[in-house]
Length: 461
Image (cartoon, rainbow, N blue to C red; front, side, top):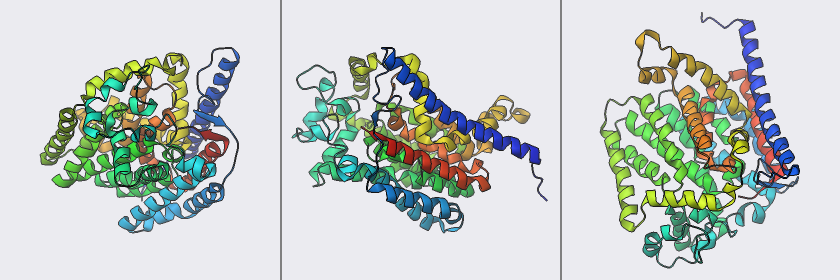
């Protein structure tokens, strides 16, 4: 018979989970109250509904009953379906449910305000698409237009990112899918791939049970509020797919998936400068896979090199863009946003994005990882310790490291509820750490978080 933890130990762990979740909610409340008090004291933190970037506007919309219905269905049937459905059918169902959840949340704001018009404001990529008549010339001259206060300075989002994302929207326009609606639906379709890519990664790394447990939590991921609709949702989907293909490639002697992984993961560097930190989850996947056949890794590296070569030959040198973006960042509101507030308020935003259940997962992962890494048994190597901990611990840990590094950099003050989407989704990889009987309750918490955020705030990105 398998020994069970003492009842008192189980109760203590449950209490710790509840305290952790309560503290997560308290952190969000503290950030909101502090932001308000600083505003009244004449020291604004420069976020419209601090710590959130959005207008305080309690409202409902056509997506309200749809979102509630999707949430209720996933909470009711999700854990059982995830545990029993055939693998490919589960991935299909998970993707469809994620799309439905993202779209229903966006429709709380209405079709035009929540979807079709979201990417058409003057700060967004689409405002610049019509002005590009020569793509090679645009790439050659891209960095010259990054700094602000020039007659031809790029708009906020174009200037703040490498040209990869801009090229995606230009390509959509050129193939006849121009305008805000198509761009928004493309971001939703790409962002919803997290519900496929994260489980595929976990399963490829040897834990199908944990992969199945994660699916309902990925479907009801609170960050769906910002996946629908922002380009950062697209970034999260691309990065997650790259990691999934890398895991498949390095564990199954398949250079094909590894090559595509190399292309996608390197392309993420040309979607967002901040996605250099995707290197942390990449290393986690490699350590967990402990590949005996290095052909796939070599293939992925060579493929990534072709992406760098292509952009460089086209006239865009990534490091030049990065240094100019740092200057542009401090030409704007970032100069006025106090680091002392945002260095911890950012964590409140990450908590809202990932949800209280993800914070509980992080606590459980850390309580396993820290002792194992500090005091490895029998002189065990760090890679061996990571492999023993498994993806349910290591992948959330990698996400935490990436988030912490982004936070202390000072280059992400505010708006991280969407900027950190590519990292926050990996906290849900540890959903199996939550006791099975409690998972339905945590799904309720996650869905409630998203519904409250979308009904109380009108997000502006």
